[in-house]
Image (cartoon, rainbow, N blue to C red; front, top):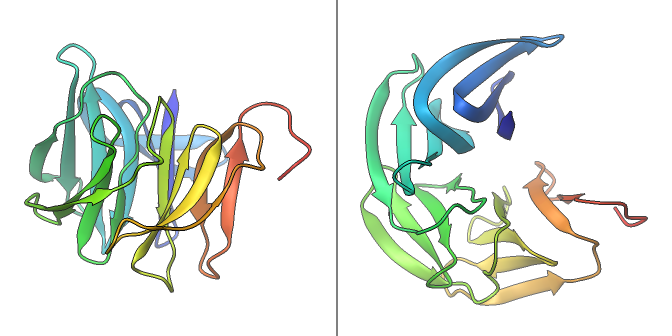
Length: 190
C-alpha cells in the first residue's frame, strides 16, 4: 500500500507499509529502506532521504534520515499523538512537520533540532499535506480538510487560501510554482 511518493534526480521513491521502494519502471520496484512501521511521507533533499514514520503499535511518529546508500544516518521523535495522515516537507535547511494538536508546524534543522514552531491555525482533523514552492522559499502550501492555503513560514500568516475545491487531499508544486491538488472524490474542479 503506497502512502507517499517523491521524485529526485530521475528516481521515484514510494513510501508505504514496511519501508521505501525505488520504482524502476513498468511496475517494477525494489525495497531500498525497510522499517517495522509505516512510512507516511518521503522526501529527498540533496541526495538525502527524509522519511516520516508512524509506528502503529506505539502510536509514535519519528523522522528518519537515510544517506544515498539507504543507510540510516539519524532519527528523531516528532511529538504528535494519534493515527493521522501526515506529511513532512524539506525546504532550504529545515524539515517541516505539522502538529494539528498545537496548530503549529514544527521546524527542525536537517539534523533534528527544533528550530521553531510556526503558527498554522488552518491545521485540523485528519488529512494534512505540505509542499514548498521553489521560488518562494519562505512559503509552504498546506492542504487540510476542505482548504488549501499558502503559509508564510517566517510569520505563520496566511498569504492566500481557497475552499473552492471538493475534498482536497494531497498537494505538490512544480518548478514553475504551480500548485497541484489531488481531490478525493468526484469533482468537476481540478
